[in-house]
Length: 181
Image (tube, rainbow, N blue to C red; front, side, top):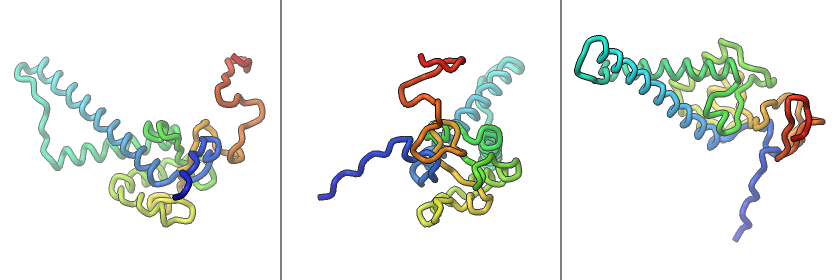
């Protein structure tokens, strides 16, 4: 019988490439977020239609093709904006991941858009991760992006497993003036 694997702490994986499981979990969260946004938009449309036109209250039914196009478009916009403006989406935030270019900088608008399009059109590209030497998906290989563990908000210039000088360790917090509290 083999000994159970020791769980890794966030400090030990900081800045390292994210694996298939964490990236798939982040993608599932992102899909749920977009579905919730679309459901809220449909409910708002139905409520406005009910108020302006009158009964009955009914959700719109644009058909399967229009629904798929609207959902895909919303997902592309959500992913591209998340990666462009913050380097992460809600799913990435929850899983402690950040999407960067290979040098650790934020993606350009073109790279974020192409990566989002590829992620929506070809989600099975994640299956390339276990076979890639650098833990890259097919989308990462095409756009030159990387998905890394980033629990602390800054991956660049931080050695793996250490914290910057003067920053609080786990369980410590600093106020706006830098005092421990």
